[in-house]
Image (cartoon, rainbow, N blue to C red; front, side, top):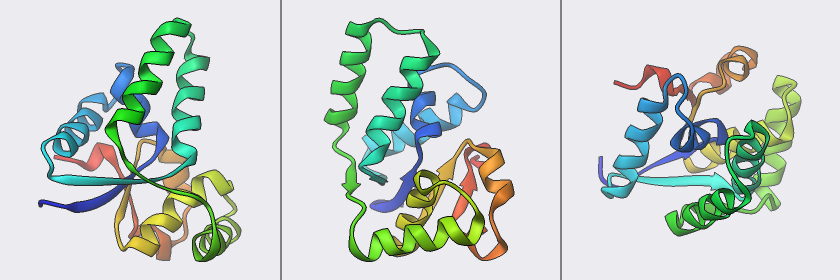
Length: 143
């Protein structure tokens, strides 16, 4: 499984810092990344989304969130700006599934990179048309 590319969305990364349902699965993906078994790809947006979600949980001080921000930076994920073919694909995914551009950007990246998106957002999965579901997996499915 070395160098297998996966796209993780913000709902998964939040579980690295907050004990929630399926946090164990999210931490398993983190550990595989640290061990070099996975390459994590994501839209640049993920850093904003994770910090915003953690901020609104009101569980962390300003200093703790600053440390989390530094930790996220230190992970050195492969982050992608929404440009060109990638932006066009994200718009296609958003319109075809009536979902946010934010959510569509993760799926579009997976499609372009021929990778899987792991998410904890079951509502998102429920909104996707069949042709897009093959790129998206719930972290709850992980063994």
